[in-house]
Image (cartoon, rainbow, N blue to C red; front, side, top):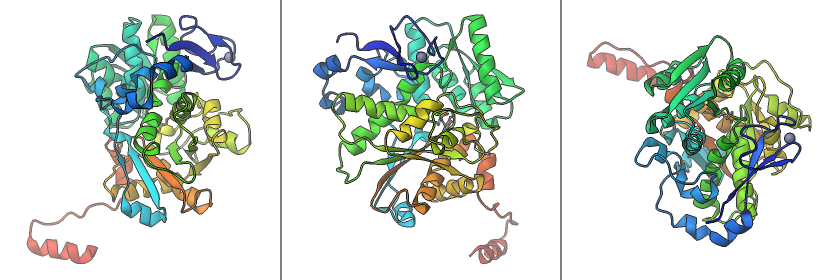
Length: 417
Ligand SMILES: Cc1ncc(COP(=O)(O)O)c(C=O)c1O
Ligand SMILES: [Zn+2]
């Protein structure tokens, strides 16, 4: 196959760069870079059937549409990222009055969040360019994903995370053997510091909304939705996709995945993309409702730590993901997020707060008549509830403690029935 990865295009000024010319953001204006492909030669070499018949049960089935040359980490957790299940729980459909509802469960990834998609592809890239150390700033999940994927192939990783990150996420970083630096500050401060350190020590930086390869890895979720759902069903109206938003890289990646498919002529109707933010961390939603792409930083405050971001690093593309697809932004309170954790739990899906936020957003969209009962909806759970057990315990009543006697059991059952 001919070279498919042509280079980069700045999402702000549209300047194009060759693959070796830039690494992270646009040197002119700091805009996020989109990776561009030679779609006409891809169209000649590839057909949907090439992908649909792949035996690879991971994101690597989309290798022809990714900017790396080969599958890295065969037989390791790195090879296992992606290809997550799509559930359709009847109870949730009934509760919401929706005919068609799916939940794509990203907690099934090797390190239990959506971020494995990005980290798998960034680590593959790091191996191809011979990077010795990969670094990232993270609220926890991106770091755990990088640490896990790096460990899988013996790559050195350094992680900067806020010291307030949930203990389970910090445990993952340590167990995967990364160099962990807990910053006495918030995610935004960890972000800025990680870039200073990367420049100083010559490390390859994975940061979300900074390294263009993260978005390419994450776009595979859109390719999976196309392959497993859109390609198999006929929808009257386009599919509506709900996802939570912090930096805005996941939502932008879904948009890019669908745009790639349209460029190849494999997707007729662009899905509508809905971003969900916590009320206390709503910089992108604010810009969307003001009808602007200018992102004003806020002082983030929400229990959903993964989407607690002062200045979203991929805000412009995140606004466009909704505005250019007929989608919208919704904001949800921490209480609504906790309710969503419990609702998803009752159908067997255990989400961390940022994962459940998307489902809370769907509730809001139904209340506000943005979504109707005839819409087909897919909601992402982006991360496992095991990542933040403290938050989970706030979503449910505590368990009863009883004496080890049958009468105590009877008494307890009487009380709770
Ligand atoms: C579980 C989870 N959901 C959602 C997000 C939001 O992704 P993004 O920051 O790309 O908007 C993150 C990011 O850390 C996350 O870990
Ligand atoms: Zn630019």
